[in-house]
Image 1 (cartoon, rainbow, N blue to C red):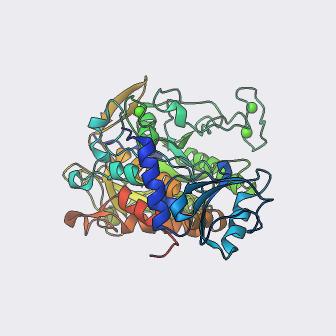
Image 2 (cartoon, rainbow, N blue to C red; image 1 turned 30 degrees about the vertical axis):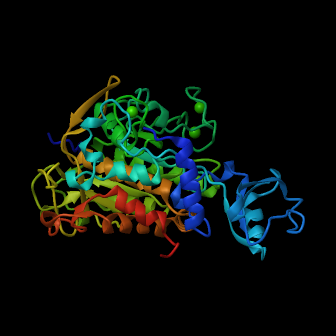
Image 3 (cartoon, rainbow, N blue to C red; image 1 turned 180 degrees about the horizontal axis):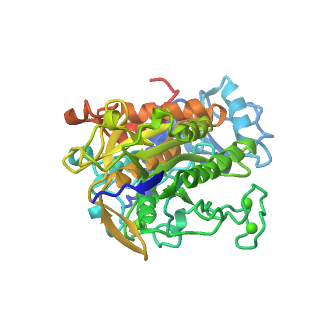
Length: 469
Ligand SMILES: [Ca+2]
Ligand SMILES: [Ca+2]
Ligand SMILES: [Ca+2]
């Protein structure tokens, strides 16, 4: 069975901000709130502490573990402690918190720039889909301003999106910094250097040729830019994630076996990552699948392999954002592969336009989870260029990108769930994405969620996941 692509037609004054954010965070929270900033724990060796009475290293029994200290806000008894680099800062933090003289203690989290007015990318004005919900965008601008702009998760892991498509122009100026690299593999030497079963898989795997040979394609390049074109680099466009790792897995248009080969690589890399505690493989949290088989009944018995692979990927914490047909019909009635498939780890996406309406794309109260902007989407294109394209192919990467973005801002609890119980973490992530959509009356009976992807609203949920409010 052939599959087809689914294309239809300032920075603020940092010092002042830093001080404001630091003090407001200290006043507002008694303990860690990892979601407030991007956290890179492995890079952090300092603890911020508030004591009941005057701070003294010796009387608190901390002179061995703490090398230096200085007051930050005297009148509040807030101090900065420099922990001995040979010690585990998290273990020291746990000890410090037990001290009866400690009101609270937290890591000296890194604070990333929050760009309030959108990025400086030269073509950003064309990216209506990143705008707020009044313009029926995904409200990325507010999400970036409030929560961060992508990057690593709370445990300092890279976040990877696998783009199963026709290939990506990995040398594209606005993508090159965000392309996944298998650091343990030496390219082009005909040897499987990292012994992961794939020879020369430097940026992913080419399922068409079953080789590490790269392949480029304008459709895949456009999809990749929506997920993660480099943001705020004064060039072209900004993706949902300004920093992310995009894995290039050519393998969409073609036969089902090609698609399955592509997904198998993704599955293998995530399994390896989990098994080696992040030493090898890739922390893939979502796949983008902007292709499919029109009018096919996934649950008819003719397509059993599809549900199987999505569920197998789901068990290791991978959600698959899938584009429904570019056709004005009810998928619940006429069928679609893969968006009509039952696997709970698929997020089925239809296309909405800048009036907040579905735009010549499949729908289904049962099968189609949500809408995302897909009409007149401006993104990266072959030849270091940009282009405007329309279709569910363009809607879907907003969702695949959102899963990655939400991992970058997720609370410590949700991040740990991804590691310890990836299957349930993925289902929780999907639930949050569907529960936080921008509701639209016209989508009520046409989708499961009844609305359009809302990145900012979803981010507000994952930031506080498990903290209680
Ligand atoms: Ca290899
Ligand atoms: Ca090699
Ligand atoms: Ca850019």
